[in-house]
Length: 382
Ligand SMILES: C[S@@+](CC[C@H](N)C(=O)[O-])C[C@H]1O[C@@H](n2cnc3c(N)ncnc32)[C@H](O)[C@@H]1O
Image (cartoon, rainbow, N blue to C red; front, top):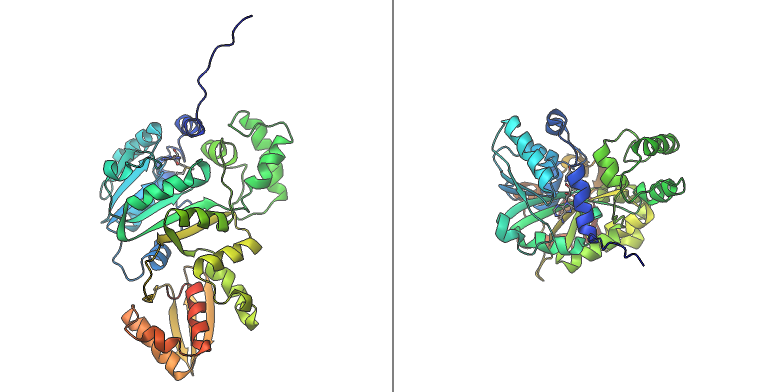
C-alpha cells in the first residue's frame, strides 16, 4: 500500500504568521499609512484613563505593529518619544523598515522582529515602556493570555497598556458562518473575487460600526475576515484573561457613553457600587461591542486609592450646577452639587491628584459616594 507523505503540520501560530508573511498588514502604501489613523483611540484618552497626571509617554511599544501604521501615527502624536515597534512577521517588519527609510520624518522608529508570546521579549527589546499599544493583534492569536503576561514584563511602574480587540458583537461572528454557508472557506483567503461579491451583499444588508467589508484591502480580508484563529470575546472574557495576567481594566472607550445613557432617573441603580471593570463588563453584556478599546493598568496593590483627575472633561459652573463636557468621549452631563461637593471638585481640578482627606470628605454621604462612583465610570476621575 502506498504510503502518504508525512507533511509537517503547522502550529496554529505558524499558520497565522504565514498569513501575515503572505500579505503584511495593513500594506505598503506609505501615504495611506502615514496619514491613516486606523481606529486607534485618541492619545488624550489613553493617557487620561491609563496614566492620569503622568508626563507624556517617553518610551512607547507598538506590540504587533504590522507594516507600521500605528507606529507612524504615534510618532505624529509623540514626536519626542522613543518608539519601538515589534511584530513576529519578518516580512511585515521589512516593509515597515523600508517605509520608515522613505518617510524621513521625526525621531526614527525601531522596528524589530519579536514574538509577543516569547517570555524573553523584554530582554530582547528592552523594558520600561510607559505606553504599550496592541491594536488588532490578540484577537488573532491562540494564546492571548500569554502575550498579556509578556507585555506586563515590558512595562514601567506607571505604565499602561492599550488593547484593541474584537468583541462578541464583531461582524465576523455572524459573517464567517454565513460565508461558509455559501461554500466559501474562511480559514484563509482563497477566492477573493467571490468573497468580495458576497461581502457586497452583506454590506448592503448591514450597517455596523466597523464599516463596509467589501471595500477593505486584501490584507484585512486575509486576517480580519478569513484566518486561522479568532477570539471574538465579550469584555468579561477579555477581562478574565487580563486579570489572570495581573492587569486591571482602567476603562474602556464605550464605558462613559454607555453609562451616560443609563445615568439618568436612577436607572443605573443596580450597577452601583461596581468597580470600573465589572461595570464595563455588565454594560457590554447588554450592548456587545464589535471592537473593544480597553486601557489596562497593572492590578493595584491593596492600598487606599488616590483619586486623579483624568483631564478628559472641561467643567463650567453656574448657580450650583457643574456642566461636564468630554470632547474625546462625546459625553456631556451636569450635576447639581452641594457647596462642599463643588469645593471638593474645584480642589481636584486644580490639584489633579486628590490631596489627603479628599476622598473621605467626598464619601462622607451616600450621595457623595455615588457621585464619585459615577465620575469614575464616566472617566472624570480614576
Ligand atoms: C491585524 S495586524 C495589526 C497591525 C497593527 N497593529 C495595526 O493595527 O495596523 C496583526 C499583526 O499582529 C502580528 N502578530 C500576530 N501574532 C503575533 C505575535 N505572537 N507576536 C508578534 N506579532 C504578532 C501579525 O504579524 C500582524 O502584523
